[in-house]
Image (cartoon, rainbow, N blue to C red; front, top):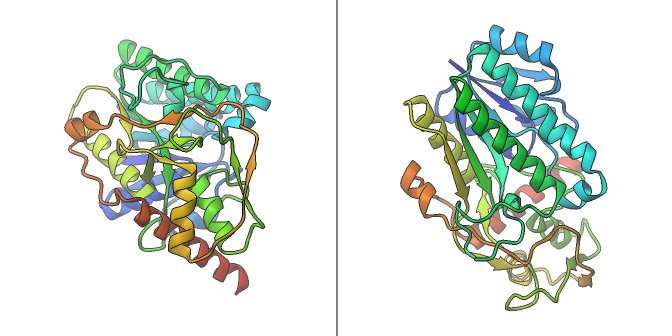
Amino acid sequence: MTVLVTGGAGYIGSHMVLALRDAGRDVVVLDDLSTGFRDAVPGDVPLVEGSCGDAELLADLLSERRIGSIIHFAGSIVVPDSVKDPLGYYLNNTVNSRALIAAAVRAGVGNFIFSSTAAVYGEPPECPIAEESPLAPISPYGTSKLMTELMLRDAANAHDIRFAALRYFNVAGADPDGRSGQSSVRATHLIKIAAQTALGLRGHLEVYGDDYPTPDGTCLRDYVHVSDLAQAHLLALGHLERGGDSLTLNCGYGRGYSVREVVEAVKRISGVDFEVRNAPRRAGDPPALVARADRIRAELNWSPAYDDLDVIVTHALSWENLLQRRAAA
């Protein structure tokens, strides 16, 4: 059976497509290309341009392509934008996800993997954060993702569908072979922005808040390599296809780095001492988000290959250099 990857022309989705192809799986991509890139999808992978909220399109696609599993990445992901435009985020992340889940149930698709987020925890009382931690998102982005988790739980209780919801911490890096990476023009991810600044594409880097209750006053995050994340999804898919129970799992390494530590790593590896400026805090940013990551390793036998900040930064810098060369060609 074929695997449908929604948002497969985007950053994480494109790495998922590569992982599926590397595993010899049949895959088709659904993406509206609002933030994704057509050339991020390999030429031998079918790309259907459209929305996850289009019920008619979904019905035809799931039937004609004989879809057996869905891996759902399509959605909006910028926390400050969600604060400014909550209804837009609820439409794209929640309403459209509801349409996709409903289409999957009607078509008899048995397996559904959802791209969730650590933002569902809000400002957790303890860190590292376990899956049992209170769910109290502080941004519409986090709430929109939590609502989809709840819909999947309830749909699985009522229908013949099982799911895996993977709560990502901070995704970074790029495919080690240079086949894909983060290409978004409006990037908000720290490591990408720092890499762009090191290469002279930005005049300076801004640190949003230096008065958090953390060791150096800047936010603490658990950075996970995008290729390790794709492998976690592949393992989750195998678990469901073998008849495994539904799962909700953190996806992180269990170790945090501050904004300043990440910036210093990028400076050291790039050899560029770029300008850093302090800026006010951003709405919706909790002080620390670090995963308790033992369950995903135990449940899925996940063994990350790139659990090293220097490796993540090196791959991100290599991708930015490649993008710069392509732009100059």
